[in-house]
Image (tube, each protein chain N blue to C red):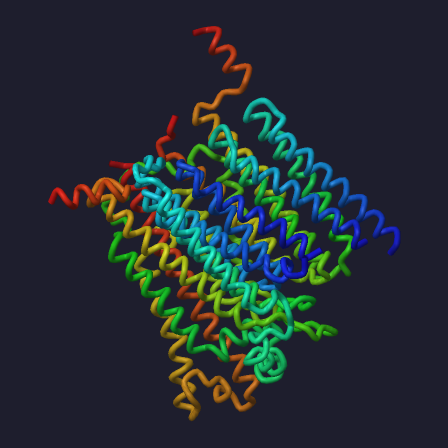
Amino acid sequence: MAVLIDLVLLSMLALTALRIIFLKDLFAVVMLFGIYSFLSALIFINLDAVDVAFTEAAVGAGISTVLMLSTLALTGRKEKESKHSSILPFLVVTVTGAALIYGTIDMPPFGDANNPIHQHVAPRYIEQSPVEVGLPNMVTSVLASYRGFDTLGETVVVFAAMIGVLTLLSVRRKEDDEAPDSGLKSHRVLHVVAKIIIPFVILFALYVQFHGDYGPGGGFQAGVIAAAAIILYALVFGLPMALRVISPKFLQILAPLGVLLYASVGIYSMFMGGNFLDYNKLAHDPVHGQHYGIIIIELGVGITVFAVMLSIFYAFASQAERRNVS
Amino acid sequence: MIGVLATVCIAILVVMGLALARACYADTVYDRILGVNMFGTKTVLFIAAVGFLMGRPDFLDIAIVYALINFIGMIAVLRFFEYIAPIE
Amino acid sequence: MFFLDILSGVLLLVGVFFGFTGALGLFRFPDFFTRVHAASVTESIASILILTGLMLQTQFDLNTAKLIFILLFLMITSPTASHALAKSARHGGLLSIPESKKKKENS
Amino acid sequence: MSFILDYYNYWVVVFLMMTGFYIVISANNLVKKIAGLNIFQTSVFMLYISMGKVTGGTAPIVVEGVELYSNPLPHVLILTAIVVGVATTSVGLALIIRIKRAYGTVEENEFKNSDDAI
């Protein structure tokens, strides 16, 4: 049954990707790309990667689509006909694909429990992490504890991306506030519904943040969902309203704060006589120490991701609105 | 009961396929958005059903995220569609 | 328990049937507004039936609560989305079939 | 038959990867290139996750009475990669907006021409 579902989903995915090649309407490309992300998240669920599916659904389908749409609002909707022939790219792709398929034949069979990948560190994680770290969700244990240093690096990369976007695009300035803002003003029903569901979305983000130790979820996903709530607010009520609720200045303070919170746990554990990010030293009982460490660094990740995603959205959306005004 | 659940999952997959076909080959933009929206809703139902089929129904959180992102994506499409000049 | 299983099976199958008719409606109906109608109405009833059917399969614990939450969420957002879409289409100048006929006659 | 079942997942991943690759090298429009890049990226994610799957296993969240779990390590790598991926995508899109402002177009051959004119 799992194989059948897998096959159907994979073929839908292949068809969507093929259709994207031939569409000239970029608006349709972005929408099919959203479907593509949804489908790949479904495949991740089917391959037991629930945490990954969670992230892909929230980030890939949600934030990417919104960002691409706001870029399209500035760059136009139609792709121009290419004058180049498509034979050379097709040849390159076919040759590369054939080489890669030839390479897969040497790979160990799909899903075999004796594959080399399952022999090295994975058994340690699977058998020992519930004892050593004391959390049922192994992905969270590995992410936050065993590979905590790596995750710190990823958080810094996300933070760096925010700096990159903000140097390229400026967020709407105060004097532009007078500009008429259309928003979705005529949609009265939408206003009421958005007001009802936004608090629940934020509540759900908090649930994902703090329940991530026991089920799918964690800082990355929670940050994105909380940002999505504010993005929904900005979409329905217009960007100036959202800027009044959470100002870009505040976000620019919040983003480094999360990274610093993460790093300070590492520094603190060094003061307590352990290595960098050695949570065992945070409390008398090592397992309790692990719990404290993971909760704090997940909070740091959540804060950073929330701030970064939201400021990136602000930067893009204010570009789109400014162009609309002029 | 597994049989019924399997039937339900496959039927929802078929519906998703139809919605995907609508989204891929649509006459107007609005038809496309309609197809995408229907695809998203059916995905939520599919995740819920497949969790019970696989015997681990504790992943319903993902279905909630899907429902949420589907709605936000829809609003974003409508919002930015105002800015994008339609091609005719 | 046996009775609940049968009830849940019936609910699931009927729900899927409605979902399927809605998907067919996407192709069979003549213009956009009728298609929105087909999609949104069947979507609501299919979600209600399928999610209720799944609720009867749970042990009435946290999963049931999550299913209720999903159901409430879909009941609020999916008609809203359809409404907003139809309204946007209206603003965008899309005409229903009788209207476009009338316009042709006038011109 | 078992040969196909053992490898079909990887083959579809390669197909998707090549689709993304084709869009990146053949598309003229930069936004479409970014979409192609994202398709490529997602197919790499799928390759990692496919390798972590164990047949008959279940999601790596401990429940009573289950012994066989899928490998959690690829999940961790890909989870962070997705978030970083969207962050880099946003930088790319921001660059595209600046290119549009500087050259007035996002079609590759058009701004190449205007570059040559200078």
